[in-house]
Amino acid sequence: MNTNNAQPNNIPQHVAIIMDGNGRWAKQRGWKRVMGHQNGIAAVRAATETAAQMGVKFLTLYAFSTENWQRSQSEVDALMSLLVDAIEKEVPELQKNKVRLLAIGNMQALPPKVAQKFERAIAQTAGNTGLTLIIALSYSGRWEIVDAAKRLCTKVLSKQLQPNDITEEEFARVLQTSAIPDPDLFIRTGGDQRISNFLLWQLAYTELHFADVLWPDFRREHFVAAIADYQQRERRFGKVNE
Image (tube, helix red, strand yellow):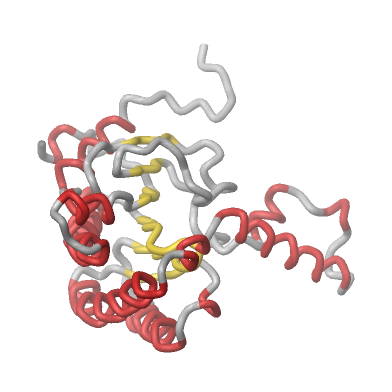
């Protein structure tokens, strides 16, 4: 499948992806789970390149959830090491393609080395004007909503805001994604059909696409297929089209 299967005048502005299936992909080959994560980097590259080429403005990838801290220490350590290596290797390519890097999540929970590498990469790509690539790290939708509620409470206690002034718009302004439009299209690989505590507020009217392919095998044709599926939907946002 190529980009001719998608309409160039109806490309989603923001695509969010749960990159699921790394562990199963490795298990099918008799390998350790970390091998699935390592091979998933090629899929990240394919998704990023395809999104940029098709005119997507924002791409959010769910890399590590708050719940993932409960995995074995060896897997967590391997993931953190993989993140550091991937950041260093991919920054030149991001610069070449004018991709701006951002991160959402509880960055304070990350090992200092990982957080520092991300902060440096974000600063290096800050002036890029192409695709914005957002990595969700130590992130969960419920964590973000609780964090936003705390921020609003602080505003109320400091008299910057009255309780009756709290609206959906005001709430959205204290979310981690305040400067990012809500996703138009959500993709989950691996075959499971759930959103797994990802962008709970932001996905209210997002179109959902579930792909059976495991993440390390995700390539351009799968991204284009998701876009083509999105373009078959009628987005009404609660309204009725007569």
